[in-house]
Image (cartoon, rainbow, N blue to C red; front, side, top):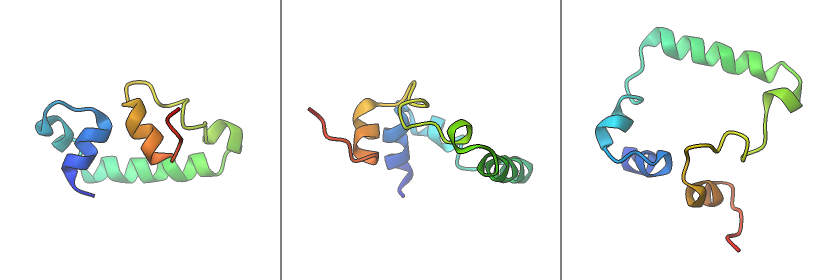
Length: 72
C-alpha cells in the first residue's frame, strides 16, 4: 500500500507524520507481534472489538470504505 494512502486513512496532514510509523525499531516490532498473538489467544469479545470501537480520530469515510459499509 502506498504510504500516501496510509497518510489519508490516518488523516495525517503531513507525510512526515505518517513516516514516523514506517521505520519502527526492531524491538517495537517484536513487542507488537507478541502483543498481537497474546490478544488472539484471549476471549474474542475482549480481543476483537467492532470497527467503530477503535474509530476515534480516524476519518469516517475511510473506515466506511475499508469495512465496505454503505454511506447512507
